Amino acid sequence: MCDYLINNYAVDGAKMYATGISNGGFVSSRLGSELSNRIAAIAVVAATMEATTIAPNCNPGRPVPAMYIHGTIDPLVPFPGGQMTAGGTAGGTILYHFQAIDRWVNLSGCNSTPITVDLPDIANDGTTIKQRTYPGGTNGSEVVSYVVLNGGHTWPQGYQYLNEAIFGKTSQDMNTCEVIWSFFKGFKR
Image (cartoon, rainbow, N blue to C red; front, side, top):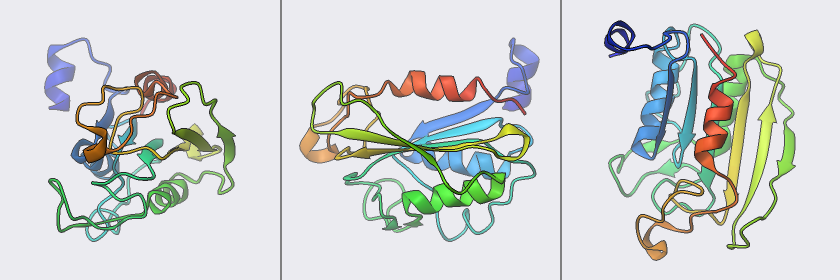
């Protein structure tokens, strides 16, 4: 698919990124792990990394800048990791949010002590967001964690696509699309 896009569209092959929510987030983690020769950076929303086959074998050929955004009360992809009980990955085991962060920090040679910022609570919607940035990685890579306190299985500042009682709260304190693009555009392969 990468070759097709490069050959048929005005695509810079050094600036290909992977992002997704939920199962798409798990796929983005896998692409960063297995296609580091093609993917410049990843951004994962409401997901972490599969724990039994993907995480243990994650050994990209180069540092991959990574961003993870996850709600602490996600009812489908548990923030503390463990056994999945719902959705397309039901029955699988996943890493805790900070296990995925630590994995990428180590793989990219980033500083293990993050720069921590509490984002402004602009929406007063019952959620807040804590950003942790791990800079100083090999070739300028970095890892960023956004923990959405009281956030659900959602895309912050996205559409509340299902009832809050089912998927949890959608934080309005951060425009996820802008945050991801700002992160991506700083990296190339």
